[in-house]
Length: 130
Image (cartoon, rainbow, N blue to C red; front, side):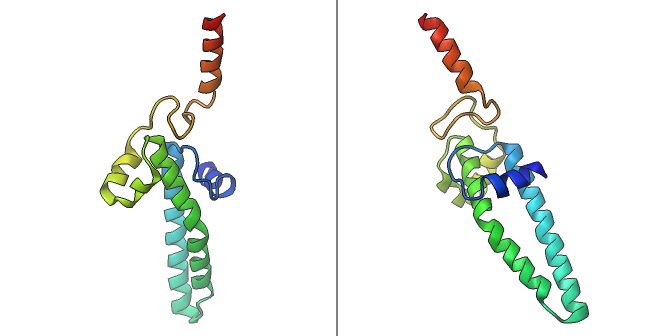
């Protein structure tokens, strides 16, 4: 759940940087669970009460999570060293989403698995220069 909240709360519309596989897939898992739960409850309540109040909540949720979903997908593409535009290619983007990200820093930012990698590299470089 922390990965879902990290994407929605901390990186709502952040298209910069990189997202680990775990962050992407945990967000996707919880997002699918919430969408199915809201759709089921919406359909169930519409059938019983003939009011579409929960249907409106479903639509608001889907629209509210649309931008973070795109943002985390773009950051996932960045983690494997590709442009965010690759998420528009259906099968290839899935292959990229399950592929391990680049180790170390790439053109899109530092490795999210090793957040202190830049500090370690700087320390190593300063020691070799001295």
